[in-house]
Image (cartoon, rainbow, N blue to C red):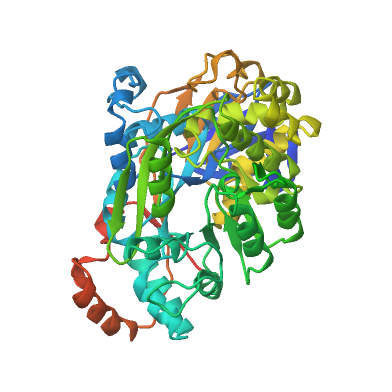
Amino acid sequence: MNKGTIGITGGRLYDPANGIDGQIRDIWIRDGVVVSESDADKNSAEIIDATGMNVMPGGVDVHSHIAGAKVNHGRKMCPEEHEAHKMDRARGGRSGAGFTVPTTFMTGCMYSEMGYTTVMEAACAPIVARHTHEELEDMPCLDKGILITMGNNEFLFDCISRGELSMARDFVAWTLKASRGYGVKVVNPGGVENWKSSRSNVGNWDQDIGGFDLTPRKVLNALIRSADELGLPHGVHLHGLNLGTTESAEQTLDSIRNSPGRLHLTHLQFMSYGKDKKGRFRSRTEELAAAVNANSNVTFDVGQIVFGPATTMTSDGPFQYNLGTMTGHKWFGGDEENETGGGIVPIRYSRKNKINALQWVTGLELFLLAKDPWRVFLTTDHPNAGPFFCYPQVIRLLMDRGYRNEILDTLPASVRKRSLLKDIEREYTLGEIVTITRAAPARVLGLNKKGHLGVGADGDVAVFHPDDDGTRAPICQGGGSLCKRCMDRPRWVLKAGRVLVKNGFLVDRVDGGTFCVSAESDPSLEPLLREHFEKYYTVAFDNYPVQDCYLPKKEEIPCR
């Protein structure tokens, strides 16, 4: 935290949460927090002249895979990336490597150089949460949190199948506290459990989960109600059924129309497909966007495809096995005891590949057909659909229809012919971009001090000069001459009132904090959990919870 006052003066402020859209305003930060002009010590303040520049809150990423066991495995599987992508000592005093899966240190630095200050790790099994927290502590410049996978937990399944929903709710609270997690992540509920037990995947919300008197719908609904009853700041974060298949859209529509509470659909692009009359793979973006538009309890992030290399990593074990088999690429699978399982497959998205091209189109159509920018968020499901540092390229696609159509014209004719994209005239305004990358993600996460620059907000600020947009050499591989970018590199980035970035490059580092929730559970649950751990876990019950020493800058967000 910067002890003292800093003023950012003369800039065009974009702060959608406070209804400010490009007005000339000064921002004053004292001791790391935004204050009113009357409370600023102007006589001793450091002044940043932002005249002619765009001033906005620091970016907030609702969904990114940045730390933990799966990310480490992804780095190991792509050794060819490390030599080709290093950070020199001038950018932080320590080397970093990786491209689709950068090191923890490099991840923090690169997010900062893009104007982001808060990122959520999108999926972590509670049994490996301690290691994930260790990696997050090694990641500079960012505030972080972890979404904890629960959609295939066997103890939870037992509770729900017996109809003991209050016990299921208490287990959710206990698990979040034990893992120092922030929210509930659900991945292919029941499907991963079936797969781990050498059964088939589940195909719809009402299919039986083998070994339990359960269906995926019962699991999802119990978790949605648990999150809402506990008053968690963020609702259930759902990776649904049939990822990437022609059955995905139908199940996604079902989940939207029948959710009993708050629901966030993650990487919706991957869950938006069906068949046309000829049986061909097609997107169903119009129906999905209409369903989301009609249900105000539902939000989504896109998971936009970026052409070039990617590393898919997900707790959806059946999908990863099928992807590895289908592509012939190297593949890794994991099994986290009684809690989840997953896999990793490095791939490359090509504009010449009809399926990849359709995925690229689908993501953009979802962005452009969503009517409410407060309920759609920019992600690439890093590193599944592309690296996070390609966000500026996606922003350019959303703001510039001519550029969008320029790339569309390079795709296979059959994709262009069946696409809605060429007929969509909408272009995002800068205010809408600030909404989907800052204000809206902070709101849906319940982070009241993030995503805005009103009095009391954290002093996280990004300042961009419009003349810089798209003028620097792109770092997104695979885009060629068409990989132009918008909001390329900020002139200034402040974290808690401390200047971290000048003229697009890191000049300082600061340790970020970790968000977790303070949900409480019934103490009578503990004896049952001890018995369960003695029977089924390789980790002792007393060694399972993450101690506070792993979160030296912990901030507990109260439940409502």
